[in-house]
Image (tube, rainbow, N blue to C red):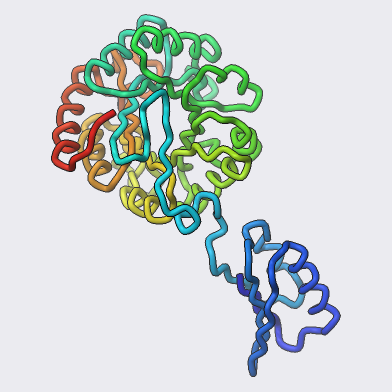
Length: 337
């Protein structure tokens, strides 16, 4: 971090600033030029609030030399992180495919869908027990009963389950869940992220609708700072001025995240656009860009789905998409599962 001081800063204010900055266990090097006086901070500056420094009376500007995320940074962890979920490894160069309905609606629905996606080649099962909805009048999920149904589907198929948490109050209900998903709306729910940092569960962290890549990495940092390094970064589309699709898939985020971080990268082609016909091409593009996993919505009866039916594939459509994903994976020398 570089701190540029205003001209003719009073000595007492300068001494106070240096003492305060030194309290963060960093080395403060003073550089005096003909027109500027600069303080160079050497060490771990991730705990220093850049806005708090900028607010000091004698400070003109502050610039970070290193990224504020340390645990998630590839510079500090050159090797890819590999997360093992019941024998399915994410981040080791293979491809995992997580599939299932947006919402768990009934025992028949989730088990029928789980069997179908497994037969098509999916390696994990997704399903929403708690559902964040824009309207308070929309279906909110079966909650605890939904998790029980997911666990029943796991017993039938053997597929590890991925489901979304919305509140700290529900965390005890996720004791038997294999991967805890943090949805886009909760990406900056920092108290929730801190709590998950004290868990040993893998966390699938979705990028917010209007959040930058650095903000996604900083949210991952919240989890990792608590001691949980089993974090997957999920690109699920961001809100732009485009109206032809529900969101815009930031495909460039995949290679960028792989360059910036050692954490596995997952892509959600279903939420990315909200259109079933775009799921396959976006899945293939994500695979080429280096995605470690895909999370795809599949429903046994999309027309009558209680949520997100327009973006959900039928089991038959998913089976066809999986055939083409397998072809692409084979061409790239990637194994599925």
